[in-house]
Length: 150
Image 1: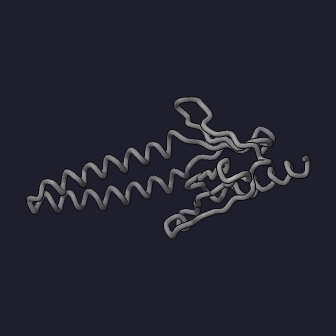
Image 2: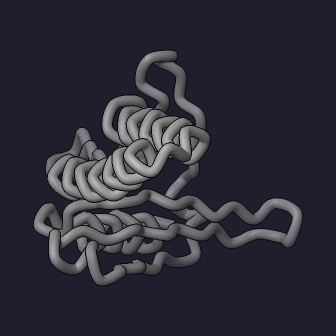
Image 3: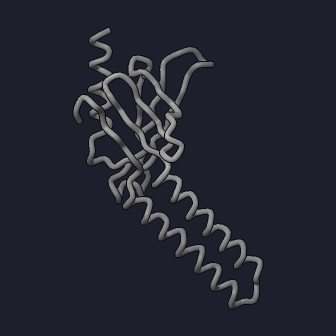
C-alpha cells in the first residue's frame, strides 16, 4: 500500500472451491442421467460444466482492479486497455456484500458508487476480494486524503 497503489484480483481460493462444487454437482447429474439413459440431461449438464469453467477463467485471469492516490481502475488484462477510470473525488461511497460461502473463505464483493446526476452515476462491483488485504480501509483512506486536499 504505497503511493503507486494497490492491485486487487478476485480471490483464487474461493473461485477454485466454487468451481469444484459446481463441477461436482453438474458432473454427478450428468453421470446419473447417463445411467438412466436420459442423454439430453447429460449433454445439458456438460454444457453447464463448460460454462462454469469459462466463468472461472474470466474471473481469475482477465480482470484486475487498482486503487492509486487519484483514481480507481478496472482493467481487462489481455486487451491491456483500461476499461474504467474514476477519480476518487467522484466516489460517494462504497459497500460490501458477503454471502455464506464468501464468509467461509473470508472474501466479499465491494460495491463502489459515484456521486453525480442520475444519468452519470456509475456503480462498480469488484467481486470476491480477499478481506485480509484491507481493500476497504485503503480505499477509505485514499478518498479521505482526496477530500482533504480539495
